[in-house]
Length: 71
Image (cartoon, rainbow, N blue to C red; front, side, top):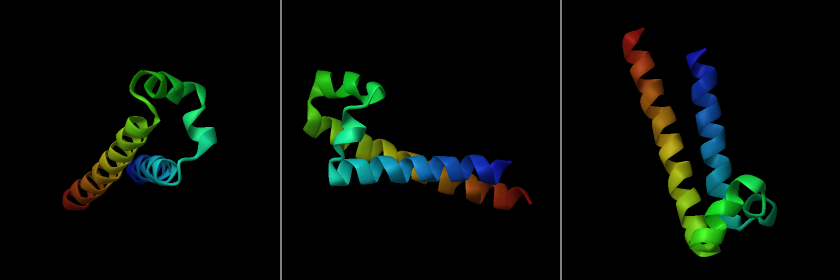
């Protein structure tokens, strides 16, 4: 079960990084991201989602390593 959740973190983090790198219109016009884009602008929203994606991937790696220590 732990690996499944870690995988979700990694995939969602990768999606956020790719969306910010390629400036995907469908991502930044979605209902969940419109609030941030309207408040800080598209350029800063791209930076925010890139950092958020990186944080999610780092979190997935950290928990993967912690689970390996426990086994």
